[in-house]
Length: 568
Image (cartoon, rainbow, N blue to C red; front, side, top):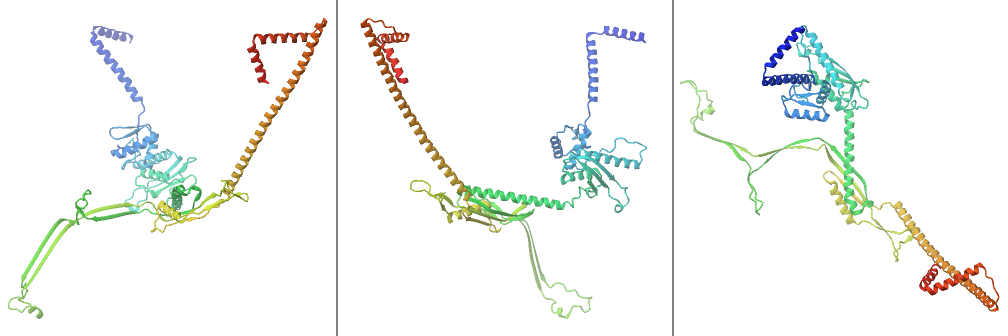
């Protein structure tokens, strides 16, 4: 074996050595392409395959766009091929989206969303095929129902009876399903979601009627008993009607207040009551109108009218005329025999008569307009509005411009609303609510003084509080002025007393100094040595220095004295 391998390698080396560079490059390119092809083959085969959403292509462009829009809303990754088939990532997503499409009536007509069988065996009997068909449909139904976001678990029981020769003896196909809603789901009360499950089951089984489908929850309550849900629907309809009634009343109330508050201010207008009787109807009216045909249009730039119309246009016309003159034909019996003409008619024989008939058939065409009117689901049958308007309350002032106080309260003068203003307000309200006499609407605007006791009390309290604040501020200012004046007077008296005390001390000091100097001069004259204390010597030296400084620098000494005086 090893020798064979060595021999093969030697042959390959010999052949490789004989090849030219071009041949070697071609072989290398072929080998590289083969390796790349094998790698791509493994990559493509190992990538996950997508699952078709529906078994048949969707040829209707609008239907295809609606399905793609639904897939985009659910955030599902999909792929659309050239034939119109839609592919999704896996079977779970396909089942969930098929359930949603069935619930939204987006499954194209004739589309079977169920994959029946992909394997066919020769030994499979018809009974086994029927059993497998029922099991496959049941399993797919359970998977699709469980794929819904509101369902936690589902069990489906499908009964497909055997086909009989006569349709009158054929038993219907029935389906019963028991579902377990997820916590927080409203599927037990949501009729739309239950109808979606009914449609999902009905479209999954051939020949299944909606009346033969029963859906229950875990408590045994029938969810698709829509006939008994009529009372609940009536209650919901009544609730919506009352909600619509309140909404209209609030809307008209805001409209009335907006039209009157800018005139009379917000505090003077009050909507006593507004009641709207609604008639909920859903009516379609078809009208056919016939009108003349316009031959010439009117020119709006001229003062006269050039409009020319004709009532109709002749489409076809048929005329016929018939004229007869003579004795006519009187049948008789065989020759030689008496005729059977009655004696009364024998006198009419051989009389000449004439007959003329003219007929004319003419087909005319006129302009026709067909109008389809869809009435709104509700109509205002009657409306009643009552509005109260208050007058104006003004303060009464005296000659000095101050409010007049009576019994501890401000005196006020009331000015009533004039009849002219009430009439104008009535007109405004009627136009605001769309008043109609034919409906029997009633609108009333009356002048009524409002009870403003609490408001007046608040104003009086605020006025008294402001007066107290003003008095407090005034007394505080007076007290402050008195304190400031007392302070300045006290300061002036203190300075005056201090000045007098300083002058007195200076006077005493001068007297003492004069007495010392006199004593010293006397001692010097008498030749007596007087010993001075250290303080006296220092004082004498300071005086001498001050005198010398005053003589040498008089300006500096003057500034120093001014500073002392300013400080004092």
